[in-house]
Each structure stands twice: as structure tokens, then as C-alpha cells.
Amino acid sequence: MIAPVQPLVKPDIVYPDSDGELMADNTKQFHLIIKIQGGLDALFKDDENVFVAGDLLWYPVEGDDKIRQAPDVMVVFGRPKGDRGSYRQWEEGNIAPQVVFEIFSPGNRMGKMFNKLKFYERYGVEEYYLYKPENNDLTGWLRSDNELNEIESMAGWVSPHLGVRFEISSGDLEIYRPDGEKFLSYVELERRRAREKEGKELAQQRAEKLAAKLRELGINPDEV
Image (cartoon, rainbow, N blue to C red; front, side, top):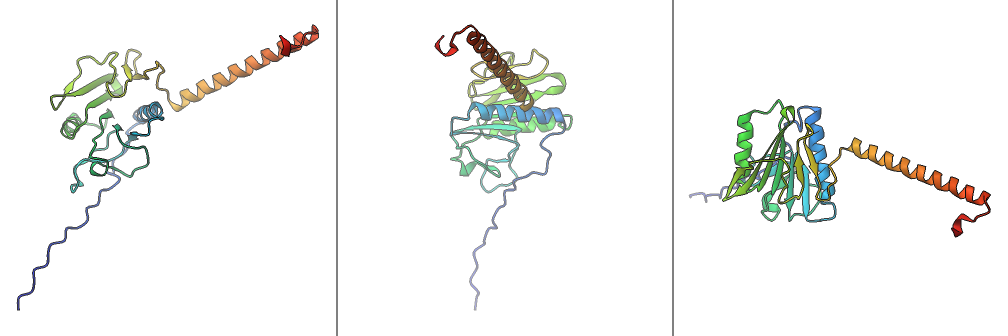
């Protein structure tokens, strides 16, 4: 008696949420990643269909857990906000991240960065920005004719998708929102908040002194 042939059962593919690599090799790289991710998250805070993430593994191909990248920052238009362990493109309406950022560190190699460029080109990224803090060098690529072509000049460049402007003339990468406000770190934001609070307190003290002086003169400040 011939035993029936059992159909092959494909094992479930596991898509790890971590690639085992560090998010950053040094404090400057880490701070830049946080500033860019936080600035973009804040810029699109009112748009529920813009997803911004930092150091999140992106799997573009279902069934292959080896094809993946973890951009330092990525932006996806057309996908809802929310927590994810990884970005599995086939579960996201097959929408690839349109914009990605990489911050170059001493641990990177040009061959590795070239492979990332070709990966982003192959899997649909439309804007790719690479910044090298050690020499203040910003390079950008924009998709055209199904290829990522290098942007000729990044000085004052405005991202077509993000609407932000890039400047490096100060010696560091500065990013400006469409309203002209600069992306700030948490420390810079806290210092600005403290200055604004101090200014309000001083204005309140001046108003109270003026009111007291008016009362001394027999004038009701509420009626002035």
C-alpha cells in the first residue's frame, strides 16, 4: 500500500523587530536622529495619515525576512500613526516609505552606504538624505525615471514631500519647517520654554506694578 504524499507545509516566517545593530555609534549621531524624527513627528502631528519612525526595520517583501533596512528616520505618507514592531510593507497597503534619512557615523563604510542607496532605489523611496556630521556634508537623492538621482545642490534645498528646508552654512545641519521655525532639540525647546515663561512672569510683574501705581493715583486700572 502506497502512503499518500503529504503536502509540504511552509514554516511561518518570523520577521524580527531588531537587527541586532546599534541605533547610533555616538552621541552626535543619536541626537541628530532624535531631532529629525521628533521635528518631523511634530510637523505632521495633526495629520493622522503620516507615519514617522526612527530606527524601525522595514521589510518590503513578504516572505523574505532577509530583505530589510532600518533607516535612521523614515516618513510614510498614507499610513496611520501608531506603534509598530517593524514596518511590513504588505500589511501597510504596500506603501513604501517616501522619505528616509541616514546619519553617517565612523562605523559606517561607503560600501554599506552604497548598498543602502541601491536598496532605497529598488524598493521605492522617493527622497533619500545622507548627512555626515564629521565634515558637515549633506547629500540628497530624488527619484526620477525610476532612479534615485543625486540632487545637484543641497544649500537651501526644500524637500518636495516634507516641505522642510535644509541649511548647513552654520557648520551643522539645520532643518526649517515651512513656517520658518527651526527644528530644535529637547534641550533647545526646554530653554525656549523657560525664556518664554520668564518673559510672561516679567510682563505680569510689570502689569501688577503699573496697576498698583494707578491705584495710588486714585485710578482704577480695570477702567483704564
